Image (cartoon, rainbow, N blue to C red; front, top):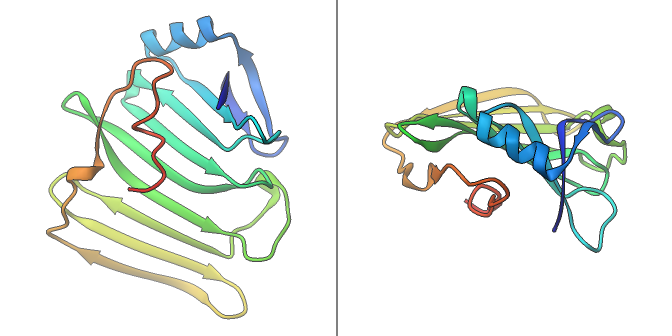
Length: 165
């Protein structure tokens, strides 16, 4: 992966907003300010994922992107007792659409919200020919041990960017 850095990623233009050098991004990591690390696979010109980090507020997010620049999977972490906890996982499916980036509307969005004590709320929103509407379900007693991650050092995002959880 080839990493580039910016303040934020613009989904509509599919470009970085206010590019940062690695040194500037590292300084933001240390100070806790918001920055975004964007990963480009060597064989692809479009980014595969991005990591948004704002340690001063205890926030990190990993967003996986498809070949059309659309967000397909988003893991949102919050800082709890010195470690990151995977609080929300959101997946999006765009069906047969080929719309680009932020212009695309998902046919189906599934969100899992976790609590540190093993609670889970699952929400599915669907819009399309075969499904339409929203459904919710809640569970208790879920094993959330795998939801915990150490706060990474700058550039060492390996544990956060694991797609399979």
